[in-house]
Length: 244
Image 1: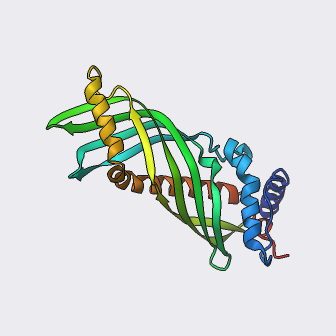
Image 2: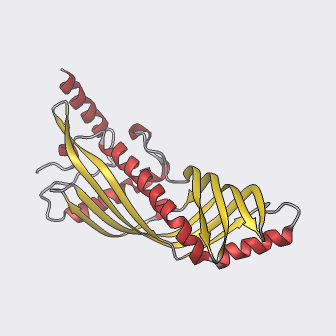
């Protein structure tokens, strides 16, 4: 009886989601179908999919970003936190390449995002000229020409007699070429020092990118893995990828 209820629930949800494009497993144009399916989902991903418990990408809200303390000859020693960061432009991704291996339940994609703009609050502990300084305030910025490689790995599991795809791991490798960031109220009553440090942060972008890249990779991996599983948990494998 419970298996029947689960199947009925899946069918009801599937009937309410016409934006989910079905791709047959034996389709010789499977890659094109998956790409079209993602494009069909784009407007929904932008605003969110409440019926699937998927939050919207515009803006992409990050409650906290923690930058681990680093030591670098060209950068001051620092520790930084970002709070309530909103990023805009993520849903404007362009798909360059998709690979799918349904036998191993592995999917790969190469994407590009032209521009991401962000704003939020920051908190920084930094040593400047051997002086420890702690400050916080608003931040704004943008990054352009963001490239990403993503690999999604999953398995098939059976629940109540129905097969579902469950994703176990998402690896994202992001390449940042440039950014600009401005930290407001950096040193309170010293606008000259504030401007100098902001200039240093932007002038040494390659060094800062090395610092923040692992954090961006991990954040994107965790977020996309959660989104993928929230979508697929509502549909059986045969609904998403029917045999014929």
